[in-house]
Length: 195
View 1 (tube, rainbow, N blue to C red):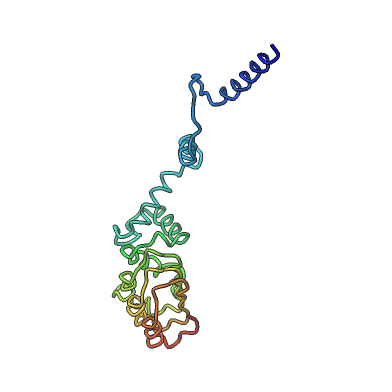
View 2: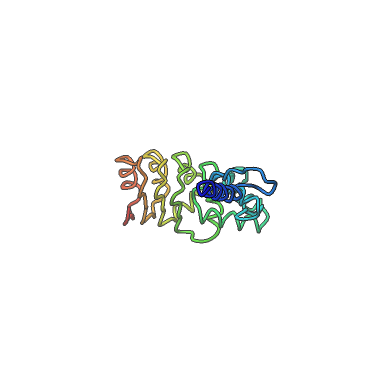
């Protein structure tokens, strides 16, 4: 009888554990995997991005759809500009022209930070030679392209002739660069102090 009582107590302990796994209807519910638990929490109003945040993220990734940030309402253009300034990974070759147009009209006209804009490639560097930006590019004294690892010698060879006043060119983490980039920068950027 003592063994039977102990068995009954163990059954009660199991029943208590099972109660924790039961949902409100008394049906067994498995714990959610981590990715599903996060989605479930988001549906309950936790960490849900606003519609404005979602829209600005989309616009930042698709700047190439606009001729200028001025095409957007002023408050959205400001938010998109801020989003890109915080996260250069949003920039693409196609949207770089729109970004350069916005950067050339506001903020620092002699410094440009594109650090971590990893989607920029050699094709994007040709944008600096575009007639709309060439005068502005010639006045740049500092350009940060660190960790733009899709840029190769060809991109820097297109870029260097446009920037004779350049004194600082940051290329840390640009793993595709070699002798061709060094020669182009050395030849076209006589004022360079830091590379």
